[in-house]
Length: 138
Image (cartoon, rainbow, N blue to C red):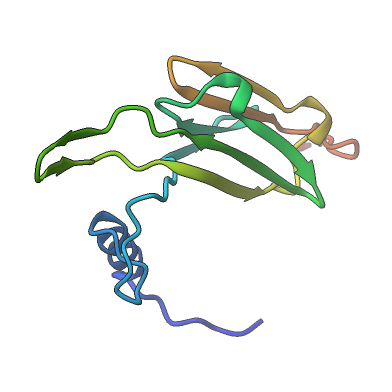
């Protein structure tokens, strides 16, 4: 396994490029939409929450393939304000896909997806180890 140097500013640079709509080649990236993701772990499950404001439930696809969970869909452009030489568009629109590798102890058969109030919550229950056993200390 090769060692990689830790770069504490890598994530910050990516967010700044996204915020200013740059792809790195100077081209505008205003049409791309990448939902914010929050992940956490409880004793019994892994939870993934994706912020999907303006996305319809029927337009969301959740797939499991090769031990990877992918969420895709599209946030469609609805309201555009144009007045003479005035143009304003602050929200991002377009197709998106986020992919997550399943932890080794996740149970792929019991994954649940719930969409409520613009947030998609994926629950990945932890599988019970078949050879786990507590040993009494004497």
